Amino acid sequence: MNLLSIVVPCFDEEENVEIFFEETSKVLKNQSFEVIYVNDGSNDSTLDKIKELAKQKSNVKYVSFSRNFGKESAIYAGLKYAKGDLICIMDADLQHPPEMLPEMIEAVENQNYDIAAARRISRKGEPKIKSFFSHRYYRIFNRISKIEIVEGATDFRVMTRPVADAILKLNEYNRFSKGLFQWVGFDTKWIDYENIKRAKGKTSWSFLGLLRYSMEGIIAFSTVPLTISILLGTIISIVAFIYMIYIIAKYILYSDPVQGFATIMCAILLLGGIQLLSIGTMGKYLEKTYFETKNRPIFIVKESNIDDSD
Image (cartoon, rainbow, N blue to C red):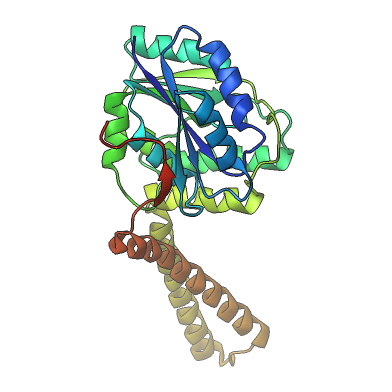
């Protein structure tokens, strides 16, 4: 039987650590599995809860970071430490229902799929404004990027070892896992499910945090924003040149002096805003390049119960 490694990123999930293991164990009674909790610099007693559980269960492993590095780093670390032939990524809050695991494992083991991924087809229980922006984001991303992300795609997926190894080869510092999974390819089976509320606790994702994360995805997989800056500059230059010709011709033909303080101020503010927008866009790409050239580690492990020599 294939060993299933379940990677569970955790940030302030003290209330969900034990519940997650209990619910997952009920579903995987006939499956050999290990759970790898990745403590992403939690501020509560998440690590203590994980350690207590690890003392009771031999198939509970953990990796604890020296500080908060983010969910993307936690996913990467979990894939790196996973020993299984099959690897699964799940959230600790049970918004990724364990009941789906048998179907996902079946798809990978017996239906010749490399990945079985969950797709959320509804956002019941979430603010409508959040659902609106999420829908728009997928549409914009797929229009400007060379890869396509399925709307509603989640990090919840079961994959084969070759897929995990392919992801680990992409050791870039600025990570956007949804895009990376699409970029490496492989045959994927999408399994639909309804939105589920957290088991306990509150999410650490704020609206601004999600907005920053979405911008990371666009910058990581598209250079269209840079092209837009060039197009805006070109269009405005052409319009300004035509307008200049118009003003000169009007003065020569009708001796009409140039007037309009308000028009000049609007033009200056418009051009200044577009220039700042373009410079800011280029700055974001330079920022990513800057951090990549530093070649800093994606994460730093403070403690773990996993023997690297295994």
